[in-house]
Image (tube, rainbow, N blue to C red):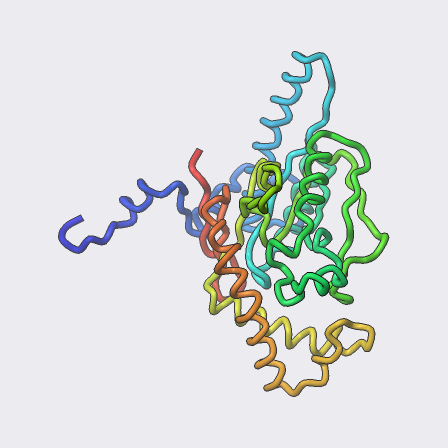
Length: 306
C-alpha cells in the first residue's frame, strides 16, 4: 500500500463483501441468453434475469427434493426485494424484472407488490402526528406486511395486499390485490431491507427481509436523486396535480420557482432525512447494488460474493 494509506482497487475488492463490475463487464454475462425470446433486453437486466433464473431453479429443485422427502407438495415462491430512495427508480426496476423473469419457462407466474399499500391510512397518520414522516418505518403497518409475506412464503392461496393511490396519496379503502402462489414475488419498497425494531413490550418478529431470497438496492448520488425528485415533482405539477381531485392539486398553482423551492423543502425535510436514517444504512445488506449515473443509466453493479 505504500505510505499513502489508500487501498488500491484489488485490495479494496479483497476486503469487500461484494464483487465489483462496470456496466460493460456485467453486460458480458448475458452470453448464451440471446436464444431466449426477450424484447426488453438490456445490458443490465437481461443478465440479472438470467442470474435470478439460475437461483430460482436451484431453489425449486431444493423444494422438490425436500417435498419428496417429507411426502408433501408445497409450492414456495421465490421472493425478490427491491429497495432504495424515493425517486431512484425502484418501481421501474421492479416492473422490468417482473416482465423479464416471467419469460423464463420454469417460473412463468411472477407477481409484484409495493409496500406503499401497507402504509397506515392518512387518518391514522394524522391522529398519530406522522403525516410529515410518511415513508418512515413507523408509518407502515409492519405487522400486516409480515403476515402477508409469511402467508405467501407458506404457499397460502389468494393472499390479499392493500392498494395505495399516489393520486389520492392514501390507501384505497376496501381495494386489494391478490397474490395466489406465484413462482416469484417481487416486493418493492423504501425500507424493505431495514431490521425491525420492536417497541417496548412487543414480541420479537421476523424482518421483512427475512422473507427475501434475493435483494436489490438501487443507488445513486444524493445530489442526483434530489434533482430527479424535483424534476418528477415539476412534471407532476404540470400533469396529475392539475386534477382538482388530486391530493397535491394545490401545488399545481405554484410558479416554477415556488415549485422548485417546495419540492426541495419536501425532499430535504422528509425524503433525505429518511434516506440518511433508514434507507441508506441498509444498502450493504443487499445481495446486489445497482448504482446509477446522472442519466438514470446503471453504471456499476455490485454482486455479493457467495
